[in-house]
Length: 292
Image (cartoon, rainbow, N blue to C red; front, side):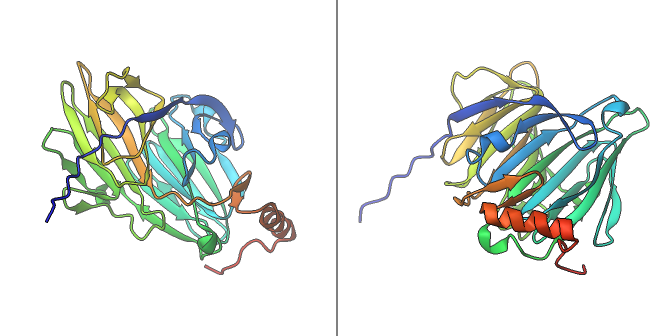
């Protein structure tokens, strides 16, 4: 019998994006890594915002009540607090190191109000992930995780990996049962080191660098640094190496949906008609489909 010879393929870089200043909500200054203009290049992901700031006036006005339907919003806080509440009666605080994975589904009206920490720092990220056609009108739900519930493992290379979703070295992250089968890791690779990380073939894989410098994909590529997003070609693994400085980045992956996207503001559906229905329901007070 002939033996199958499968060589590991290192994912090469498909494209590089640089985050750009934007103002959202009631006047929040942030950096948009990708959004509406990049659809459908990063399917199933729709948007990534980097809201790190040391200036309270740039974030305290927050994101007053607004609707979401058809997507999931993932908020990961590095420093500071974000107070949140919604139309279903949920409320709380997302603190330093915490994650809120909100599946809006058929509809949630909520607000997010950044408060910062005692030094006035407010650091974090919000990612939007799409829902497939058959699940866009599912019941809304939250997976809210405090920092202490999120495991951290050390790779044999010395890299530390915080596992929000996915699995590393047999350790699973606490976010479960997400349709796009995501991986969401906070990875730090020390100076003068390298890391190889297996990835699922066919999945969209992204690295967003927010501290230090790293060289990705095993090529003679330029160093990627703070505010740079790397999207990879298909393959079996990614590689990153460091020189004199460490690098810290979000490693995010998910299964593409390959479906049409109709997007307006905070609502993402498949057709313009579905968007029109959603905004009409919102206008008439019929947006919320569940009592929670």
